[in-house]
Amino acid sequence: MAPGLDLRAVGFDHPDAVALIDAVQQVYVERYGGADRTPVEPGEFAPPLGLFVVGYTADQPILCGGWRLRSAAPDDPELRDGDVELKRMYVVDTFRGRRYARRLLAELERAAAEAGGLRMVLETGTRQPEAIALYRSSGYLEMARFGVYRHAEDSRCFAKPLT
Image (cartoon, rainbow, N blue to C red; front, side, top):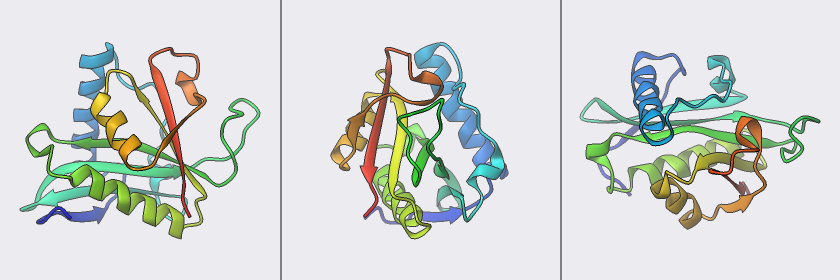
């Protein structure tokens, strides 16, 4: 367990969430040349169909992540009814390596399962090896690509049953 971490459910448009989301978008710009193009609506992360969490230490926002309900769709055949999609996982650089991301991921999985989610799915990229390592070591298996990056060669998608 990561001591001194306070996980708080907040709106996707909460100022601390916005600042951390802007920071992760900057990482995407640095690593891929542009921000994430996945369509996201703040209301998708509101209970009971979603959740967004900011983690604080000493009242400083240091990490974020959330999930939103997804379902089977003709234009995205890899998704299933009961899927929840993990989005915007991010830890401020100076707080990495302390297992905070692992703790947040476990909380998001717990909350998604409690809300009726059957499988957590996510998309990341090959230029985020630390994210891929986290997901693999947390029991995620690679799945066929989905979403706006389903045809992108540097995209990697993962899934994990929420049982």
